[in-house]
Length: 101
Image 1 (cartoon, rainbow, N blue to C red):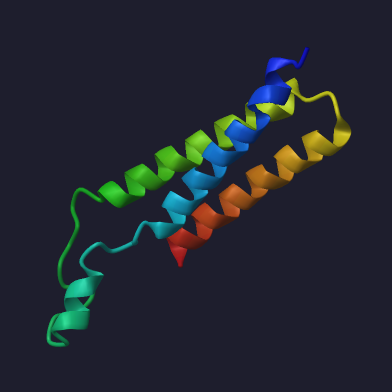
Image 2 (cartoon, rainbow, N blue to C red):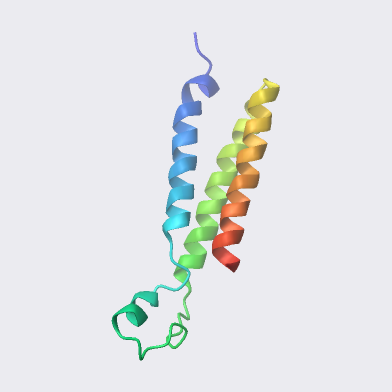
């Protein structure tokens, strides 16, 4: 009989991948497309006071890190632990690039 971590590991990695994909797809400035249509509008001219994209990106980061932390704690294999730790570092790197680039 398979343990629940073995059965759910592919699902957990799929959710992790989708969270990273969504985080990468989020635009830092949701009004950037307006300057592409009309060059007279500066990219930073319209302020996004709510900054919802940043909040969603942080929530996706927390989801991705939480999944990997659970897999890290539940893993008994050293290779799986190293993989979970590397994926956590990768998620942080994606978030840092999106947040500050």
